[in-house]
Image 1 (tube, one colour):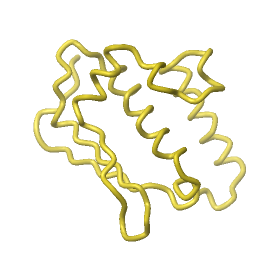
Image 2 (tube, helix red, strand yellow; image 1 turned 45 degrees about the vertical axis):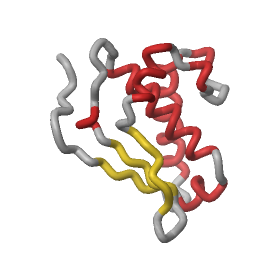
Image 3 (cartoon, one colour; image 1 turned 90 degrees about the vertical axis):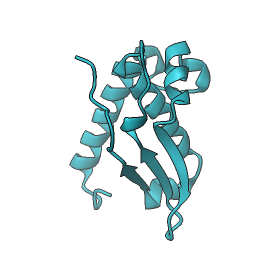
Image 4 (spheres, helix red, strand yellow; image 1 turned 135 degrees about the vertical axis):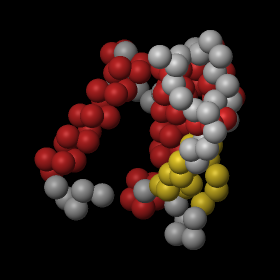
Length: 118
């Protein structure tokens, strides 16, 4: 958390909405992102399994695992992966109040070939 630092919290909110705007456009800023907001390529990025919910830790926090080495995006763009990750993370975070107070645990398992195409 931000230890009740209003300026830091406001900056985080601004960054969040700027990212959401870049990923989904102005018309989605004030609404929850649903599976219907993802295009076919975004859904394909969901299927590759490189970003998963993996249960809970001993403090009952949601565990999210990112495994970029599983990337098999062929013709997909990094934007599709980011939209799929945003959808997954926001659905996990909004599903329970405790995620918003206790947070989540993210594990990055960076093994294998996961270099972005230039």
